Length: 424
Ligand SMILES: Cc1cc2nc3c(=O)[nH]c(=O)nc-3n(C[C@H](O)[C@H](O)[C@H](O)COP(=O)(O)OP(=O)(O)OC[C@H]3O[C@@H](n4cnc5c(N)ncnc54)[C@H](O)[C@@H]3O)c2cc1C
Image: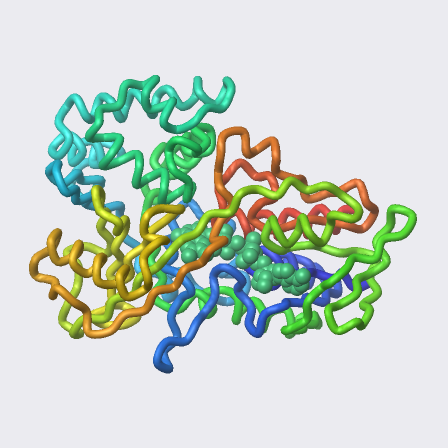
């Protein structure tokens, strides 16, 4: 019988692709007008851009395999760069996280780190990294407590750990889970060199996976309904019977995958199961359009001591376009969009004086619930894919997998959930 999937984000789509590939019928419903959820296409002056700048890394193997399955080649889809990031600060000299030199990995990274942070800075980073195994075998703590325990300097905290923690966990260091940061560092910097590669999309997010996934699902006999919102789950005698949609119509199903964001999932399930609603934190992206000759010295740079956190060169998609990313809650939320554009442009001009003081065009996209907050002990709050209700399954980036909210986690959970369902 057809499996019903609620939610057409990357996780629900990955679940549907996995099921139809095995010849299992699916019907995926999505409340929005388009697929992609928190990683989707939006339109700006007739051009397609992203709802927020995303960065993928070489360690996202499930995501890359899933994209390949639906016919998207990573070579066409991404510009792939060896890690090469300069973090500019308002007070300290630039800090360089780069593996670009003749030495083999990880010595290449170490060499550039020593050159910009000195031997002392390098030893502090090694100390934190080698402590991560011990940390993961004990109780979780906040990232700021972990930084204190491993005696990180004021400079490294400000210029390296704060921005890395915001970029990967979208959570301030005082609340963020040290376990989750340690896992991310191990997966990205601790393994093969290519795991740390930056993958910067050359095409809009919707074209990277959602559109190709939808074609794959339909070609394999699956059905997709947009603008169809699940209002209520129908569960009797602890067994899934189907759902009632917002417009009142009923869809009968004995297997149901809920692949929505954690808060929507908790609301839908609340009459039957308690799913802890995590705090959800925002990410703002400020797109700045300059003349087409403008670009950054490298694909992305970090900024600290400023409201702007990460700046991406989007020349490959739109010449002269930069995207400035501001993660987590903060003072920037109090500014109007035009105040934010003006401040961010000035900060960029101050850091890189060749950039004009104001861009010729701009767009601010504030995603208020971009990710779940990756707080201390969050792993204990995350549900599993299999529930105690017969026929009810969970996907989405919040389902337990040891990682923060990422596209890799979303795809992995969708695929895992579908595989589990097929074994029952
Ligand atoms: C601005 C921004 C920047 C980000 N940057 C990165 C990054 O650089 N790298 C990275 O890996 N990740 C990043 N993320 C996180 C990543 O986008 C998410 O982890 C991922 O997209 C979550 O996918 P999902 O399928 O689990 O959930 P969602 O994308 O939230 O999909 C759930 C879908 O369910 C639908 N839905 C909800 N309720 C119902 C209902 N009742 N009926 C029918 N449909 C429903 C929603 O409309 C939505 O389309 C970023 C997120 C944002 C917003």
